[in-house]
Image 1 (cartoon, rainbow, N blue to C red):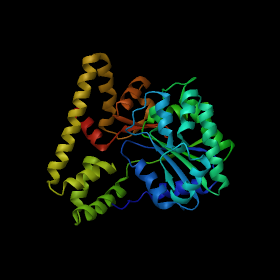
Image 2 (cartoon, helix red, strand yellow; image 1 turned 60 degrees about the vertical axis):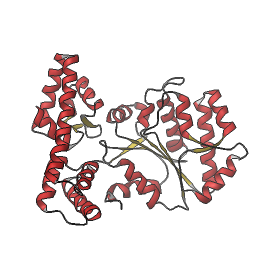
Image 3 (spheres, rainbow, N blue to C red; image 1 turned 90 degrees about the horizontal axis):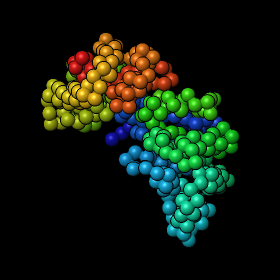
Image 4 (cartoon, one colour; image 1 turned 135 degrees about the vertical axis):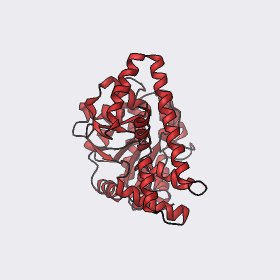
Length: 349
């Protein structure tokens, strides 16, 4: 399927890449808002393949419980008889997007044995410098980076990693670094870290506004259904799922074989059931806390977006971790993770 819209975000990322590496960039937004699709569109279809080499490391769906797991994901292992320089020349010639930093097997084994992030970072820097010397601009993208938030190796690995990213961008101007995450608590945590003051910037990939959501429905209807939707149908879809790209796609796709009213009602029923059972578990665990949760969720009965500090930190973080609410730490606002969640909140409460 053709990629839809997001030209504003795409142009921003391309403009960043065209300049000298200076900042760490966080690409963030609600769950299923299209962050990964956006970055893949940029790196696969919008970059000059003769100028850039992209290392795209996706931690989604990968079980990472210890340091060694992360290191193995970070690298792409090659046979021992290949030297790093030979690997780099192959990359420059053949592959603009790579799933990991190339490394000979014996070198990887050595790095794993030593368990030293500094040695790992030194190896990566040498690879990036070699690419730069060959006339290529390296780009490092890590998707779902929050998965290593609590991992320790001589202190928290996440802090050592970000110090290294600062070295690559702010100090050496060697490599563009993009971190993708839908975990808004992780973003808030990093945003408030003094070590990133003046060293990180942010690209929000939010759900579509109403105008673009309706255009997306038109686009999908032609692509999937080979027909146009009526204004009434589009308004009805928006009233249930808002501008969440994945939800809109699900609705249009199911319209191939189902009635629109039934599709939307079933989606909402599922979301209502999930919220009811969630609240039931909270009540069973701690009835007083349950009352507070219900009280503060009630703020969304009349509002889709509220100021974050209107909900106490303990409850706010609990609801964010449970993917009920999304925090925009830059704007200081809270909203339900989707229109479906919002509709469920209004009906359950």
